[in-house]
Image (cartoon, rainbow, N blue to C red; front, side):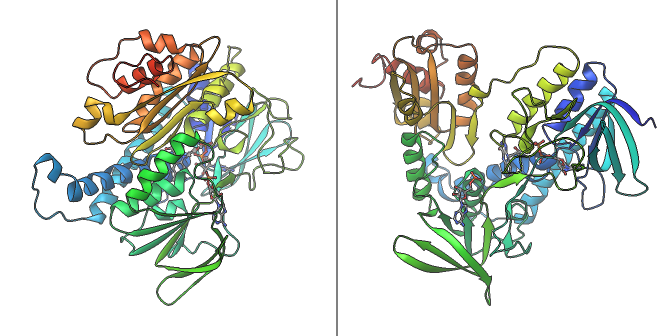
Length: 475
Ligand code: FAD
Ligand code: AMP
């Protein structure tokens, strides 16, 4: 096998594998090194996203939602399903099969595009050389015209509560539990904490979420966050805001957590705890001190707007660089970099990256929130629409939530769209396209939306921005 490539990508997650495929499509001889292994020791491309993130979490969210609905919501449809039983082992096996299928799919795409997959560890040396250490065998030196660093991120551990893989787990461990805990503690009410807390709540656990900040989902629009908080509490997630976990220790049957809030110090006894306090860039063993690549105070590899590092022809993309830790953000950076290397045009529109939280209801947004527009001194108009008036949402028995459209008061350009409601993650795509084309509220208003669909709520919210909603009273 050759040791000389046009492009070597280190990391085979959604940033790295997409970059590798696009580089190969551009006619470049490309290799992608990845260290992720299955329990059987096989290379498992797809990174955190496919192996222990986006995909397995969505598989369990879907299964647990079906279980919850079967237990509690079929009666409203006039269906008596009798006794509903949970087979967690089968639920987990279904999840594992989806993961295996998708990871195998990336291997297939690599073969079809002639990307060389290398199983093992990569390290950047000076002069665009990469040391590849296979899981078995001798390390060897690869030469590349361009190197793309896409090594992703890892969960942050609380020093006073180290992961033990059994009772104190990270997000990956929380996706692998083999029994529903009676009492589950979740530390951190971010995207991951809320999604994983929802899974185990729906399956029957008593879930307590401890969040250090006073505000719920500060990155979302405040009106949407309030609605989401109300819905999630209604489902039984016991959310404590302003509650900072100080320490914890294993107790006889579980874990005793100590946290502080305005009222003082508290103890909470749980059977298991998921620590979901954020993720940090993963660069351990990656950068030779003379490689010329610089990291910032948070450990992110420093890059410019086109993902160039401070070393010539070395690029970095995905979770290992600044910006939201989202799979689609990393993938688009991968496409951009692979196209720039090939001499094509490449660009990422960082202002129009959608965020989705896959709770029930889902929470999704793109662009700026109302508070951000106020802080930026932008004159804007807002329109909202409640799913309670959506025929489709009522038919689905999922009529909780709202859509909110924010547009420039003078030019009418869309500035932000925020959804808390059924299929919000799908609905937001319309807003993303509209904003990518610098669309206006009027563009959404004049676009025909099929009836009855959830998307009509986006249409009505756009109309409401001009006090012209048909199915709501305009105030
Ligand atoms: P990663 O996916 O982390 O991939 C990096 C890869 O590089 C890994 O395979 C790693 O083993 C490998 N690697 C690291 N160092 C080396 C080295 N030196 N040599 C060789 N290989 C190396 N994002 C969304 O957009 N939507 C979601 O719904 C979503 N859900 C999530 C749910 C959970 C529970 C978690 C944990 C994350 C979720 N994310 C989601 C975030 C998403 O997984 C990440 O943003 C995404 O995986 C980042 O992609 P990446 O390619 O930058 O890094
Ligand atoms: P995210 O960064 O979106 O994954 O969310 C992680 C969340 O964990 C943030 O909202 C943090 O405020 C929260 N967090 C971090 N440390 C603690 C802690 N010690 N106790 C409770 N919450 C925490």
